[in-house]
Image 1 (cartoon, rainbow, N blue to C red):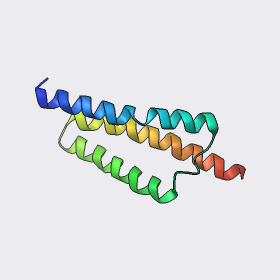
Image 2 (cartoon, rainbow, N blue to C red):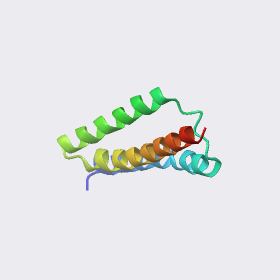
Image 3 (cartoon, rainbow, N blue to C red):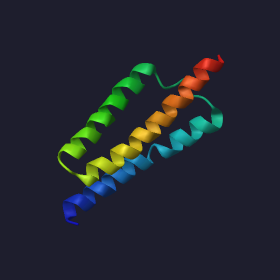
Length: 87
């Protein structure tokens, strides 16, 4: 593993881990009203494209954090859909 990949993995780990408190809070409070549908669309597609790009260039430091971030965003999206259905 070279220095650039290590830096990429650390950076990706930190930015992905930054989502965990928000996801945990949303599940505890069952509140996602502060997240707009347009935010989900833009951010979700952005992360998905980063993931595709990571596979295209075979960059583990791009693939892993974006795959985890996409799962976190997907879990928030699922919670928001459930919240809207209960209103």
